[in-house]
Length: 105
Image 1 (cartoon, rainbow, N blue to C red):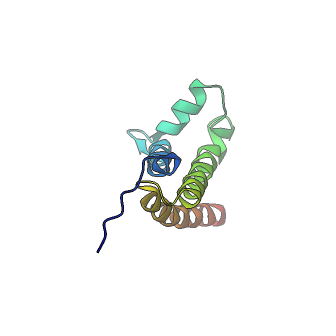
Image 2: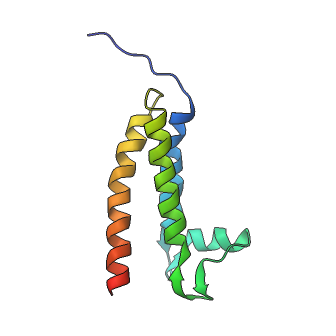
């Protein structure tokens, strides 16, 4: 069996984008979400009504997961791109479930 050498390229960023999106949605301590702090520091709103309402950070995270999937799919021949794409599918399913359950609650 021939070993295929994969090149580093744009697809290599797919898992990195995915990891960054997971970090954005990670909370610690008193339910402080890291993404909220980052969004506030760059001037974007994390919540629709101050600290209540619709939590925009979840949607920013969802957008980044979709971006990670797209990059992994488009540049699948690059190193780690397939892992980023497949992991994005899993995280996308989980986030979609969280959004649906969150809207129902």
